[in-house]
Image (cartoon, rainbow, N blue to C red; front, side):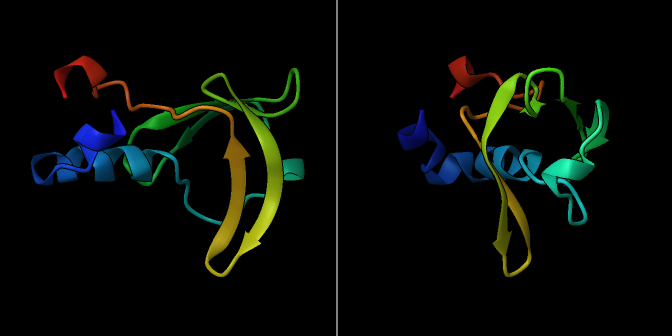
Length: 89
């Protein structure tokens, strides 16, 4: 799938997927609460703290990595916006 996303004709789809992984502001793992949060891409992701922190079911495996422009939380899967069909790539 990555090879297809890197093709010039899929540039917009790749940007959509990447920005779906970003929420505005600086959010530390300790500040996460259950619920839906708007992404930079414009749609929402669902956060859960029931069994560690998850984002749309993807588990946060490394939290609170401080970057120069925000906080990074590493998840164990790529999450796709609801309107992106990987089979269509």
